[in-house]
Image: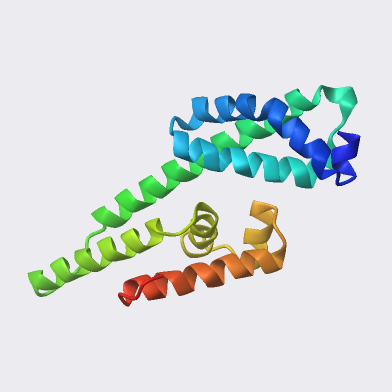
Amino acid sequence: MPRIAAGDQEAFATWYDATSAIAYGIVLRVVRNPALAEEVTQEVYVEAWRQATRFDPTRGSSLTWLSTISRRKAVDRVRSTERAARRDERAATVAIDVEDPSDLVVLQDEWRRARSAVDTLSAAQRQAIELVYFSGCTHREVAELLDIPLGTAKARIRDALRQLRRKLEGRST
């Protein structure tokens, strides 16, 4: 771990090869979706690389540290997914005051198109957009919550909005 904390990519690659199956297994048991588990496991290793200087060998092995990160990231993703599903349910059941029933059909169609467009975003972009538009977070709060630089948070949000605009206007992404 000291070599990894010093930025040694070869040491990180060796550690990854030795531990990735375990981390993936932990994540998969929590999220129960192989594709999502792969994505979350990647996020686990990005965090491990960034936070390697915080590893404290007096508190346990690097595998224990990685297991903790894996479980936390997986649980966070499940909770985030569940919150999004509940928000979608609430949004679908909100009474909309329309004078013409055909307006309701149009609104429902627009909602489905918007949800479909959001589903095309990468997980990182979707998470940032949801924090801004559904949770009311500022760009700075998004950066802090996701533990990423402010510029990265702004770029994710900007790129996601551009992709959504293209998708909703019927242009390819």
